[in-house]
Length: 167
Image (cartoon, rainbow, N blue to C red; front, side, top):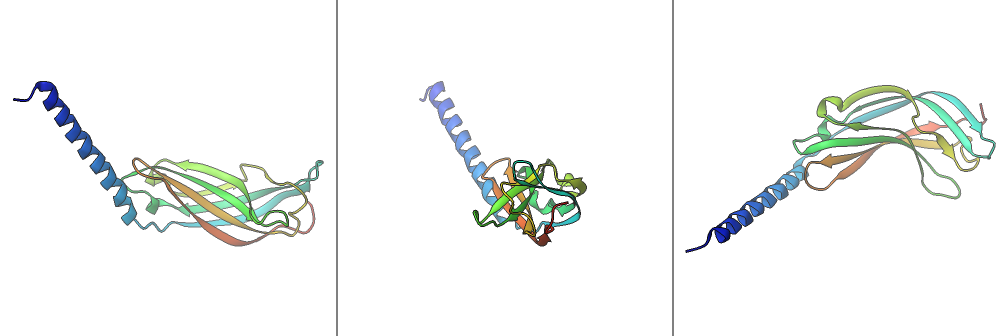
């Protein structure tokens, strides 16, 4: 006959194995979700476009950001981190990314939003590379699950251009 300790060990091992299997199945079930988020960003105004005393370009934008990220939420989603970045090329770097705005979406109910804002973070280029520059606004998101691996994606919006002269 087996002792109490041996039986408790067997029961605990079985329970942990079942729990690990359930977590793996939960994580794999997210792979069957095919989200279709939408987003639109409008640049309403260039508040200022100036050359700072140290020679760097700085831009302040007024933006309308609207997005529907509800399809990113499943039963396994804890929260979604979302940020808007300006992306452009310079002779020195093929890809420059400047974060303009970010937020954390805690629930599916908050995942459909419209925001009228100026850039939360400073849009600065190290140098005088922004005059007349074409740039993209890209909405990035990172889905943080309750269990399993994080995943991220983005929507890129093109066709934005900065003025040729400082304001």
